[in-house]
Image (cartoon, rainbow, N blue to C red):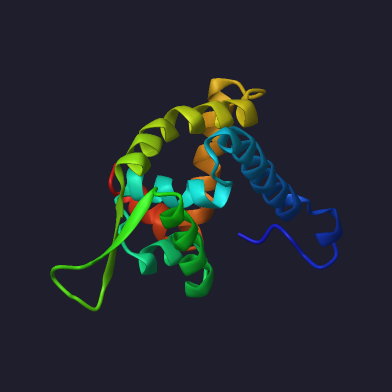
Length: 157
């Protein structure tokens, strides 16, 4: 269904609102993660590893839409903070597997609590039904656009 035309596009704020909401979410998470010494970008790596079982740099690159150079630098910083380690895959020595260190696992165990606080701050103005509707609409948009991570997540429900 086409909602927008060149004539009415100037009245469209959907892209702006989605972008601003994503930026605000990241800013809020950054604030909540600051006491733990990590950034929102590092939070996203750790939450992907802990919550979704992602254990390779390539899969993280796909999930987070980062290039391999940026991911390498991110993983270097997380390794320097003793939150993760790189190990050679036992199945394929050419591949690197990522594992959380004891400190990384301790922080990963806290991420759902920290993330819940941050998202409550972001979505606190919404009623429960509104939040459910928003999640439904965003999921519908992402699935229709072919977002693999969303499709995989809802397929697992």
